[in-house]
Length: 477
Image (cartoon, rainbow, N blue to C red; front, side):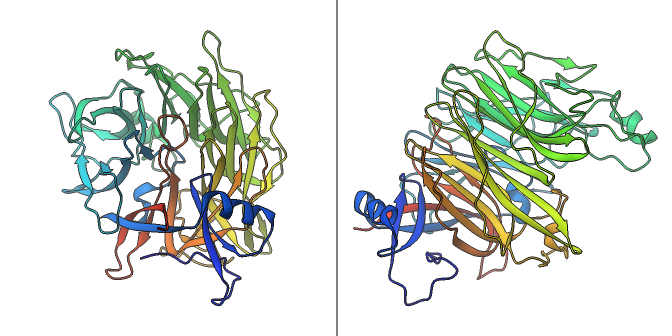
């Protein structure tokens, strides 16, 4: 099925050109609509957005919650997607390979996580993972969940060979943060999670950086609930972790009176060795998008607000371009008149450390959340889920449960793009009328995708079941 390419306010009689912006994003242009449209069409030529279903999944949250890297396109044009779905009796993570060339109805290769003698995962549900590709082509994966006979959620790691059929070559829990059982018993309300929401990046030397939302027994709110904070660990190319075994305290980046808690990290690594970390965290009682960096031989820079505001900022995602500029998107919302208003915002951080004034990407007549951002050598592109204010999702949550981002976020899938360095985004285009959820742009060996790809979950019109979908641009012949 080919999605509608026109804008929501275009009539069926409009003559459209589907063009690629920076060889990544497909937008619906109407002939004669501005110099940018004509230049793009002249330079790139017309193309068509193709989509295919790679596999059926248990629910719409198969790519859900975390704004981490879940899609990689390798140098051969193969797409790798990590998805969470039920396998046997419990939810597990699956590495999905969509081999080049992509086409509608293609058969994906599935590699599920497997138990090993050293760690048993199948007895407890696992949560959404992050993946990254190393310079040798191997896929690194990190996630959280229970293991063996312990239900508390700890961080787990796996490494896959991609030569021939994908094969899991390493599986381990490099460290744990004990104390879950005692805190859970003493808490005022049930506690299910402990360590969660992993994000992963691998630099050009093969060093892996793992950020996650961490908790420990010593940092608690007044009702006994553990406070979250972003922690970071590294894995050297020869497999040595910066922290090992049982930890008395996670390796937090910064938790203090000014920044007491942070959630949902997004991490990217530059070719110069600088690692950029984004998340959202409490600042004077409001959730705000936060940013910090690490460089070789230097400690953490400390958190800074990306775009201070009185609104509620969450769902922060990031990408990095070849010049080391960090592109960030987030959802920002406010409660109004018993309802809520949410928009998608974008800002870029120059190499000199300056964040630009945010640009709103979604329109004022819609609510939007769970943005994803991707870059190539010539463009930046953003996707998100949008809906009519006041609409309820499949779980009966009005406005997808705002402000909580633990709710299912469903709606129509929209995209936009801009040439790098211009910040001139086009009006959003609907590419899946929905219900759709949790888009994620591909990254590739040179930070941008070696070949464009966008993954998301959607409801198949025929079966009514949720599926993992892959979208790409194909030039007309």
